[in-house]
Length: 151
Image 1 (spheres, one colour):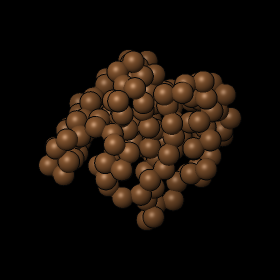
Image 2 (cartoon, helix red, strand yellow):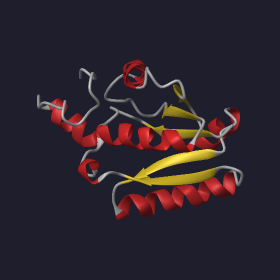
Image 3 (cartoon, helix red, strand yellow):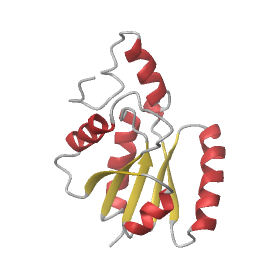
Image 4 (cartoon, helix red, strand yellow):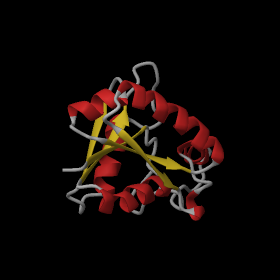
C-alpha cells in the first residue's frame, strides 16, 4: 500500500492545498493530511477547527485521513508506515526551501521519498498567511478557501 503524508500547518487550508491533495489522490492508496503542532507557536485558527475543516473538505474521500502530530515529520511518516512526503511548490523560493528540507529528511529517513507537485497557476498567489491577513482585517476569504469552509 502506497501511503503518503502531506504535512503543513493548514492555518487555514486553502484552495492550493486542496488542489495538491486532489491531484495526489490517484498517485497513492492513502494520503494523511498531517497538521504539524508546534508547542512554541500558537495557530491563528485552533487545531480542532483546522482538523474539522480538512475532514469536511474530504469527507467523501475514503483515501484521505487527517491527523495532527508533534515532532519530526519523518518520525510521523515512519509511525504511519508512509513512504512518501507530498510537498507543493508555488515559486522558485518554495523550491529552494523545500529542496533543503527534502535533503535533510532524506538523510534522516532514506526510505521516505519526497514528491513535489506544482501548484496550479490560479492558486500560486494564495497562501495561508495572506488568507489570515485578509480575515484579520475583515476581508472576504471565501475565494481563497475550499467551498463549505466558513471562516
